[in-house]
Image (cartoon, rainbow over all chains, first blue to last red):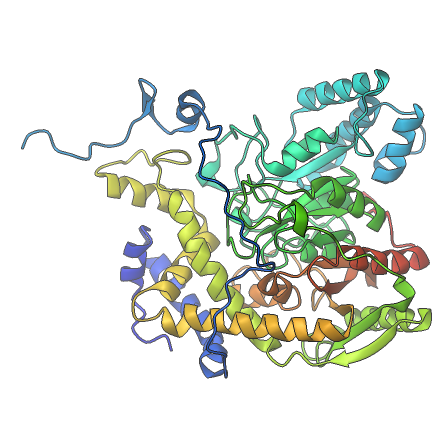
Length: 96
Length: 485
């Protein structure tokens, strides 16, 4: 069931950079875990999927503005900020 | 006060506070002394602001003196797992990713505890992002089982259970995605309840797997567990899965001696340690002697629970943990190049091995070409497991099994074998998949190590689970157990 398992592709999708040792370890462990999942492939299952709800209540609230964290509280926990805004590495090159 | 305050129940402490024979300050000072004496050995807490605790205690004593006490938890310390937000306190999830994060807001449960007059008492160690069954995955420190310091306390709420068993605090909060309250409760000889999905708001709980996560109370007795549950349970529009005011009525407890108890066929067989099976069988015989109707029930898809859980939980985790990108909060790598390089480096430096393993697994089961074979089939299996549990619970009031197949293992014993660790959760996972309430109740020892049994009930049957637990606890004296330290 784990055919086509490509650790480099997965790491790229997950935005993780793995060392060669990590790749070997995780590949081996994930293959073992996926082998345990074989029971799912063989089981006789219903066509319906589970939506994880216990009580079928319409739990949507009205779409109205409520209290939010202010800029000061948000920038205080940000890794880097300037002039009340979160700063990040340059996204657009200004030389073009 | 000669009788050590750290050995008393929350209910008894509440009575003394109400009678005026104890102040919250005296209680907190005694618990801080206990913390200084044993926390380094046990490792349950990762943070305790002693000045803040004493300020909260003084405020509580002042309220009580002014006749403005807020109820049975007024002045009682409640320690909190480090994935539940308390304004102004660390919120690390025991991860390097959030090592420097101080929460800018209160979770719903923290608001409820403040409204009840409780003292928000420190941060408890856990497996990183609640991923694990031993608390060995904490990036901050190890926590040890107070009954045997060479062994794990369970996890992921290992700090929450160990703090109770070590007499560090009378009440604690945990979170439970696949057994993370009940498994450490069993290993540490305390009571842990995972409520019905939707009973307690998760607003302010750091998300792991949102269709499974619940916050729940942990204590050294059923009475204390119920006290804390009552304080936490209320409607909250900020968690759309939280029941509204009209839908949260608990089924009445009824007479515990008339409970119909189902024993799932085959659950006491393969893989269960003999001493665990013996303790759980003795509990079954106790209930039979009390007049409860005991019957065997069929749960034919039980073997699918572990694979179903590890597909659903890791899929949701890979999505939920996508938010840790080094931009808005959390760790940002100093080796930032382009934004994508910065995100990749931040995540690679910030997450520990088990979190990376689960993100990779979740990414795989959701990826193009594999989602139908894994994720969609897991959702279909989940529907089957849920329908089998609900069908079984139509004929009985509760299902009784061990909480964990074996007693607490030695630190490091299973660290290199993730699949073996995942099988620790074999009895607890179905309640999360089906959204059902479940409780672990201490029922004896295997040698010197605590053993618990596990009860699962229909949605909103928490009062029945507590009543069943109370009947057993009262007859056996397993309440208020503490390890000698």
